[in-house]
Image (cartoon, rainbow, N blue to C red):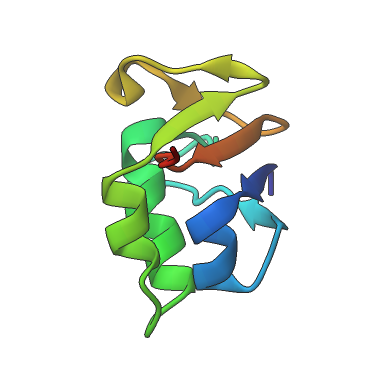
Length: 95
């Protein structure tokens, strides 16, 4: 089963207690070829389900994504197929 590597920073790392996590991509039930793929726009729900009882869902709702070190403008246009490195980029506050 293909996997992706998720990198957690700042509030996302605090919420999960992790800085990195290997995540298996689900195989769609309707896919007879057993090809794993996941729209980046669906990754937040998958990660939140892996970390119930945390504030990860709220953190992800305010965060952006980077895939293979490239910022993503529209997560609906990116499909993960395995082997990608996906970073959760949390908003930064400062002074």
